[in-house]
Amino acid sequence: MTDNSGLEPDTPAGRRSWGQWVGRPGRSLTRRLIWLASAWIMIALVVTGLVLTSLFQESALRRLGNTLSDTIDEVVVASNASGDTVATAEIKDARSLRPLSGKYWAVAEPVADDRLQMLVRSGSLAGSDLIVPADLPQRLSQAVGQTITYNAAGPRGEPLRVAASMKRLPGRTEPVVFMAGIDRSDVDRDTQQFATVTWVALLLMGLGLGAAVLIQVQIGLRPLYALRNEIADVRKGKAARIVHLYPLEIQPLADQVNRLLTHNQETVERQRTHVGNLAHALKTPLSVMLAEAGTAEGALPDMVRRQSDIMKAQVDHHLRRARAAARAQLIGERTPIAGVIDEMAVMLEQVFEAKGVEIDWRAPDELDFRGERQDLQEILGNLIENACKWSTRRVRVVAAPSGPGQMTLVVEDDGPGLPEDQRDAVLKRGARLDETAPGSGLGLSIVDELVRAYGGRLTLASSPLGGLRVVAELPAAES
Image (cartoon, rainbow, N blue to C red):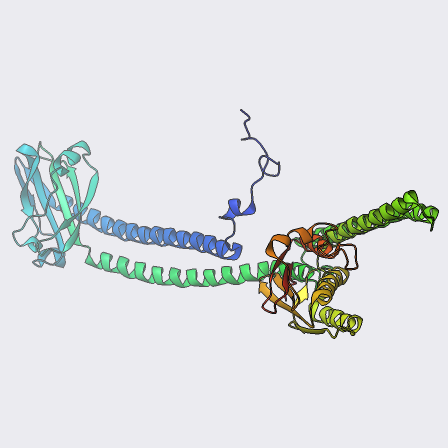
């Protein structure tokens, strides 16, 4: 088993499509980039909002904690002990004297079962006790001299921030607990207001950044859209090369596409040259053989002339097929079909003037064949000539688009038609159902080969006119 884990992405086994790196293949890259950027922006803004709100709240609670520590220090200074008795002098703080004012203090002592028993209370408590968590006595005993803060409910149910510290007083063996609490409603309200303002500001910032990302992506990808449109124009035959200049990052791609187009054209031209050379190399010996046979009588000269004609027809057929296959590889070729049909109709009506053949044709002016004019002329010429040859008087030719990049070419006549069991035979090379008719029997075979060379299909059927109906499916140039 081969391990491909260490292969580079540009190696054959390690290569991955662009869609696998940024998303599923086939999805819009612009939409994907915008969604990714928007997601990162939203995550960053949410984290920023949470962090800022948390920092603001911690700062506000720290200020409350400092106030509570100062209050505890004042109570400690004002307290004295005599045995088990603890007394606290009057603290000149209006809020701690006014009942239920929101600022409270108390002095307590630890008792059995990890509880605190209140010894002295501020006048603001009005006989109530500060709420003590169950684990507070144990925590204080483990941190004597340190201050522990927590949240609790006050006598009026208001939210309190409470600080507690265990200290020792002169004249008393056991330590006592000093507690101070203050209403934190203002802090909660300020924190909520800060959070609201922050989230609104971050939301507006996020919308602005999202719009900026959208604009930046659209502007950044605009050269790619332009390049895509130019390549489409080349493929449709509206342009031969990419001519516009692009940013430094994209221009190499445009240059490579132009090099590919040039290479493709040079390859096709070389194929055409080889085909022409082959035609010359084959036809010359055949011409010599026919000249040697001359008009001499006898079985051998007749056989030479007959076989030479067959060989010449076969050579022409295969060379024509090779040229068509080479031309079909060209990118951007397009031929208006209406003009070619009109040309063929006028010419063949003159050829069959004595027979009185009328050719009725219809084709949209904007319909173009995606291929060379010479091949379209050969396809139409063979089909219409065959229809004129077998028709009584009427021949109908209809060209129409059949789908994206596709078109159908229908040629019908009012002749005797063709039995269904003989239709496949006429598409074979050299097949002739009527040996008395002129020709080599290669007409429909040539058409079938040309149509196949362009990736199309040729089908035979019965026509409503009474004769044969030939349907050629061909590539159409996009508008």
